[in-house]
Length: 436
Image (cartoon, rainbow, N blue to C red; front, top):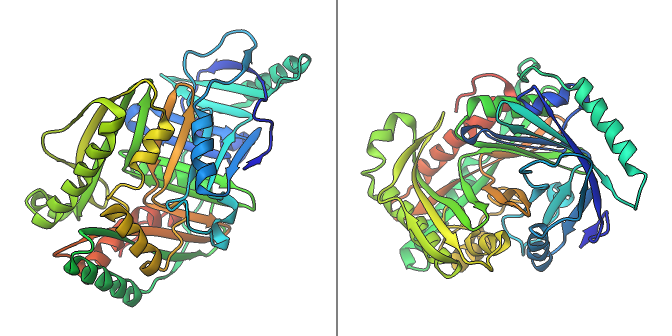
């Protein structure tokens, strides 16, 4: 476990309200944020700058232990008024497979990495709340915190941030032959009865004509994908993991849990037939059944939508079932994540057999792709499944896309599905209308 600050550290903080509505606008004066998180549908948007404290895990046990710690109360000394609610204040994520070793591109992100920012800006109605934090050593820190807060408030832009950079041309590379061969291997496992479903992922390498402006990429993602959670998480060495995912892993508010099953996909032109597709209904039902089964030991009651609805996105339509639960008093967000992740929407059925198959056959380090990302704190947690995402450094981006394989799938159709799913990120990276 790597700590850049004592776990028993006490903090001093001060906050203020601004007549502004966009945390990302701070990039114009503060530079690229350390992290960004936005869910437009619920008016949730937050950005952080600086890393006051870092908790980083190096194995699965540490990852779960740290996640459990993040939900405990913090010793926070407020200067003046305290906010009614704070998102986080810990932000970060975890690997899809906590037990597999990290390849070089993912080393900086670690098995799990969570940061406490020096400066946190989040949306509160039609305003922004700004909070500055510092270690509390017993006195004298207040003046520095207040001065920093005033500096930020005096300079923070009031306008909404829109992409500013010119389009970037992309050179793409990906092996269709290799992916379709791996899908063929998955279908053999399904035909043998060893698997019911498995999600195969692949990477798309994108080289830009110049370094990517990642703030602009995030701005495009949120504008083009308003039904998704837009995110970005930095790690040392100039690398950032970013994306716009449609899938919530869990949203915990005290004892109330919201989650969803998101599986079964079609191009927008084929949306009307999605609900009647036997293949997609079976794929979707496997996810619903798994989530309900995983939550029952943790909850007083669990309920789900009576039938799936269509979730239309810009380039693809999914089947979606909303799921709600009232958690038992002793259950924390860490328990929920440990029970749910990975769902069959990103792993497979049976769970352990599917994960074992992926370790042998996928030939890809997913890193944080399809893993839990978001925020955790004493007030609860909001974690998403990191889909439609990319690892970006300089002018290079590695995109991650996947497709659920069940009986009736074909290598050709699954390749086409992943091509469609790559469009959101390609359009955000390039700043133009990409086609596949």
